[in-house]
Image (cartoon, rainbow, N blue to C red; front, top):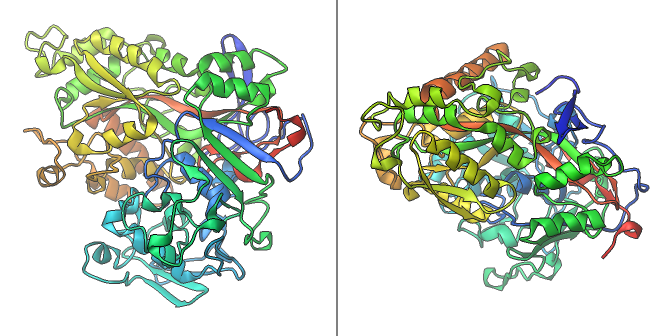
Length: 624
């Protein structure tokens, strides 16, 4: 992460606006109040989105969407450790939440002991104290295959006995002990320097077994999540949990219409810190509106306070160029990379020269304009955002293995690569094989994604690759590409933000072969796939195999300090030059547009989304 605040001047349509980058805060983003009112408790914070986009139906054991992490941590779920949900470097620092303190490991780094705070209770309808056994049960749920925990790979190899539990060889996880209701002990298989971050992820939050046992399939618990934070899903208090069959979905969450949070009457602010959660509004209401223009028109008119969706490029330009409106535009570094993924098992992208040619020819400048220009962040030239490395610096800073004039693509360099491909028989730099024609291409149907499709088509056509696009809402688009048996060759609907502040959450998470899943998979390029696993999950497996960087990942995982940082940078370069799984095009900022009734706004650096724990609204300034 960056070690100090930076303010970058960003030009949009000839207008300069301030950007509070990672490590920053204040200014036009981060922890800043809108001058239109005073900060007070109360009111309803209203939002709309084109699509919830949940990848695990909002079940915290399985859900892997950054915005869902944001809702959990700011509003709904407390974990052993958490973050302050604020902008910049302070927002990436672990702090106690359910635990009384951040523990120091013992037993040569293999044992972590947490003491729970007294007086923290589940919300309705459970209405009892949270115990260490509720956290142990959440860990068991992560290791239950049918729940399909999408980031369970962080925990299973690390916690002693979790792999055996997952395989059905043990009825409990031997490495987790709960000697009393206020103590939980984790014993690890090896020293793991980032373990404390794992107990801040929402899947590790407490789940009451009397409810959680009723939901054993992927995503099933999402409409019945029991609150441990300051808010609960509306209707929680009306749910009958006397038997599993009596439990009906909470009225406040309809996946096709809205998600509403109201105050949890069992939340005690004395057990929390206002630096972590101020919990100012009385409620939050998020509605589905498939019309992006309508959403941002309503924000401008005061009928909504915000949206998790990025504003369209014309809205950004409109606000950035108006001195009276600029204050409502809130850009912050999201620690995120936007990319086009290339499936290394599927022709023609099973050929590295085709993948390199696609990188050279891509018009990244046009893709950025589709999003709104430089306010959305700098052009990406590698996998992990530079701010994620020590000192916020990638070495060298001007690294670009696929340079082109003005980032608009280099057709000659692309053709030189294509000439070396097995799919260019006459070596003229144009793919002449049938596998390059009408390739299935996945994209989203919301935000700027449809504007990207013709740009990508035009770029690739210059080297003989034509696409057959399909654009879907966020959730079904993710479902398609996260299922390797679908054999999706190429797509632009995915992006990646950190799970926690370490480069491993990109490089280990996305490219380790053992992380490839039959569903909920995020290793879209299938790097490290073996022939045996391909058969098991129904994926293709080319005659020449696929690239594998498992050994490099294992080496970096075991490093510390400067050696760890240098190791991850070297792997980032190896992926870009020798593996080429992606066409990264943008290190994305989160750009929020807020309404005039918002009297306090903050950005949650840990999730790369709005810091709902620290927002406030003035109902007198809201329109209907």
